[in-house]
Every structure is written in C-alpha cells, then in structure tokens.
Image 1 (spheres, protein in one colour):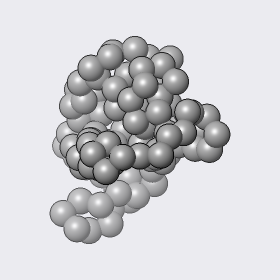
Image 2 (cartoon, rainbow, N blue to C red):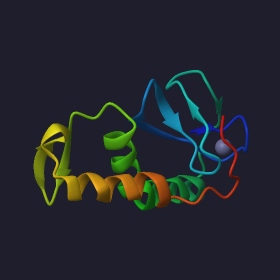
Image 3 (cartoon, rainbow, N blue to C red):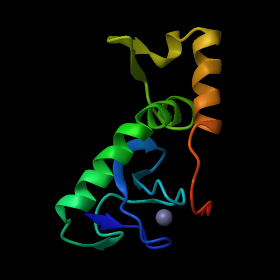
Amino acid sequence: MELCNRCGRPTIATFNFRGKERWCPGCGATYELYNSCVQIKPTEERQAEQDAIYQKAAPFLQAQGIIYGRAIATEIDGKKVAVADLTDEQRAHFQELADNSWDYPEKVFI
Ligand SMILES: [Zn+2]
C-alpha cells in the first residue's frame, strides 16, 4: 500500500489521470505508479478502508478518465462504448461527475 506524500492517505492505482497512474482520494495528488510514494504493509482495516474508497470513487474515476484522461472506451450499463461515440447527454453527465462528484477532504492540488 502506498501513502500520499502530501496528506498521508492511501493512494489508489488507476489509469484515469493523464500521465499518472496513482491518485490520492484525500487531496487529489497524482503520482507515477511505482516508487513514487511511501510504501507500507497494509493492515486489514486499512485495506478494507481503501477498498471502500475505491468503490465509492469508481464513478468519479470513470468520468475523470473519459473527460480528462485518455480513455478511448468505457462501460455503460454493461456495454463497452467508444468515448468518441458518447452522446452529448452522456458526455455532459460524465463532465458533471468529473468536475463535481468527488469531495477532497484535504483539498490540495498539485
Ligand atoms: Zn493526498
């Protein structure tokens, strides 16, 4: 488990941020996937907390990848959809999620 260098919260590995593969749900910092954060051996409790955060953040991360990342396809209602084929309504929905669906407790951005 890797901890954020800025706020100390556990980070999440994700490919939804352009050029960075690790995201801090606490402050919004992003990092490269390997050797970029302090590594700790996770406790069962901390791993469960991180898993719960990952589940909660999944819609935000999907939208982030579509709007600001380099996602070329996504899954909507169990079907794979090319980002280029999204309707204006779907794109607006993901824009709203990417911009307003995640509250950062630490609210610090790089
Ligand atoms: Zn952080």
